[in-house]
Amino acid sequence: MPDTRLPSLDFAALKELIRKWGRAQGFQQVGFAGIDLGEHEAHLKEWLTAGFHGEMDYMARHGIKRSRPAELEPGTLSVISVRMDYLPEPMPAMKQALEDPAGAYVSRYALGRDYHKLMRRRLQRLADRIADHIGSFGYRVYTDSAPVLEKALAANAGLGWIGKHTNLIHRDAGSWFFLGEIYTDLPLRPDAPVSNHCGHCTACIDICPTRAIVAPYQLDARRCVSYLTIELKGPIPEELRPAIGNRIYGCDDCQLVCPWNRFARMTEEAEFLPRQGLEPAVLVEFFGWGETEFLRRTEGSAIRRIGHERWLRNLAVALGNAAPNPVLAEMLRRRLDDASPLVREHVEWALARHSKHR
Image 1 (cartoon, rainbow, N blue to C red):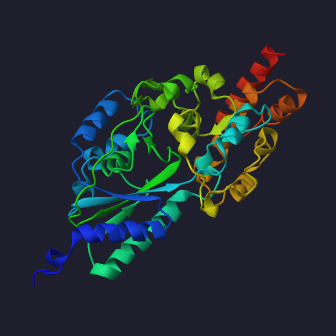
Image 2 (cartoon, rainbow, N blue to C red; image 1 turned 30 degrees about the vertical axis):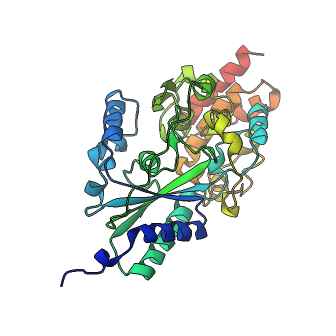
Image 3 (cartoon, one colour; image 1 turned 90 degrees about the vertical axis):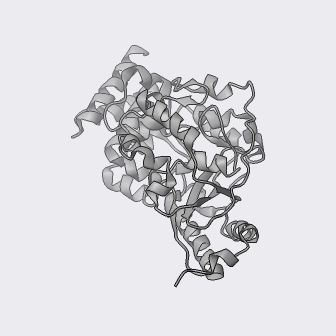
């Protein structure tokens, strides 16, 4: 028998209920987008053609599925897009951490519990609540877990605009938030996108330590500190190492200088607060962790995905950028016979830096 349920639904009213239920799940905003991403698809193709994705082959492997929701999830008619704040501390504290000569800077999204599972659970609860109200419907939840253009969808859903640093910005909440989506077969009317308010500002472009923002709205991931310390599996290019400073996992510089982040709000989620002794972060202490300690301290954290070898690689670069002193040099020398050629090469580079600047 044909499904006669959907035609009788008041979809405008349903949207407002979904917003209400989303807020109850801890999302600061819920918006609705259509599935036409033509303009964003063109930008994606240009970005891939330029090779800006580096070793992230999966960006190209999925092809147009990333920009065509109905091809990724057949039957998709609309997308429910959500955002959740994660800022764990005031921004002056982050700037102080970046300037700490003995400190190690970890991108603030990674200090707490891995957001993927938390967001996925909340999205699933939201989908269950919708089903409780209207009966079964087709959907799939995503939290950076599949080829989804989440920033493009969020922009189309009115959750903000894509800034010159390629992050999403909300004029009343800045950019310190996670995104998630529910692809659904419900014909929910799209919300209106908001206008771009970056204006003539170039603060994010000017501050980027490795000059990865090669033009407004164009990020060369191969130069981005987040790519270099997280996605890149091999050696970090020597010419970029000095600019990485003490950033051992990701980078927040472009968000720290964005004027719209003066409106950012601290997270209300305890799970996003620092855990497992990751804050305060001390270079020497972190570099001394064996693999067992690394796995214990990063349990439930996004940091674990890079593994102990790349963790030591990143720390060796940060130690090489630190002011020379006997303690750091001794810590580095202890790793000269590390089993990993990758670690040894970066340790040798760091020791050479210390010898040069003594």
